[in-house]
Image (spheres, rainbow, N blue to C red):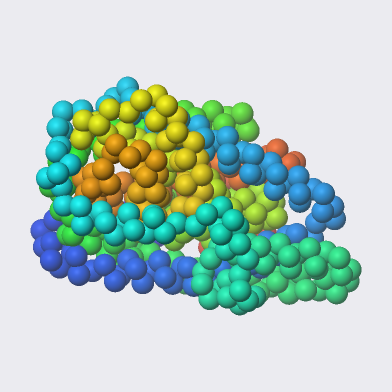
Length: 428
């Protein structure tokens, strides 16, 4: 893994270089990054299904599972709301959009129209809940909808738990099958440098460094806010749970680099599940918290939504009342739950949130289109760390965390760890 870490780092630097020196060539390399993410997503659904179903099947007390789910949603709501507040406060204090004096009439509304249209066709709460139920058992796997897969896995786990010896045999089979898919992931991950190279070359080649310079104040504010949130807020939560946030970040540095290159936290979901189990968190807790967190615990996306909205208001000289800001916060608490770890989802969610502020023209989104890819990387990184911390905290909360193993693994670091497939086989 240490070699992979270096390879991904080199690939990111080479991708940025190619994109800067040969923009057209860099932009044409987008399929490399897309192909890597699609390969990972191909195996993610089976991994989640097998892990969650087998974990629930092995639980002796179903009340414990219900308690775990309730604590997970409570944690997500509290921390996610805090992230929204942080973005709102920083936007008011720093005011990254002040001085832009942009006339909305001069902006090309068609640039943001596509995102606004997607946001306008968003689902109601009832539709969203119904969408959690797949049309067919295999439909969730075919569509790659992680929450639908999670629903099927929970039902399967419950059924196995109630079927005695036969259920135990099914759970054992699912555990063996999961090793196969983790093996597939182990092969695909070797291609991470190629995916990171292509994705980074496309980002720089397509949008250029000029876009970074023009909106440097917003980008710097967002990245700084996210770093502070991770080190201070998540750091404090981690400290209360008995571990160091810096050691944890070091432990998942390979995954962070892959996310940096691909701008997608989904690209490392299976690896994160393995590492969190290796850190001492129970398989059932990991299987429930991580997939759910990818839709309900997106700290980076939440910070971005409130901060970017205030930036657009300041840049277009659109005054916002305290009531409007509080309304923005309330709506963002709901719309942020529909975002995922895929690139661009945060931007569409932002468009949906802007709808609650009629005074702020939707055309203002055009200001962010050129730099959203750079912001997406930071969103994904923050989301990944947030979900990792959440898993360990909730595992300890539930008494499902081997604290001595956690301390030992974090002190040892990722350099000495075995390959993912072997680690999974040994741990299981």
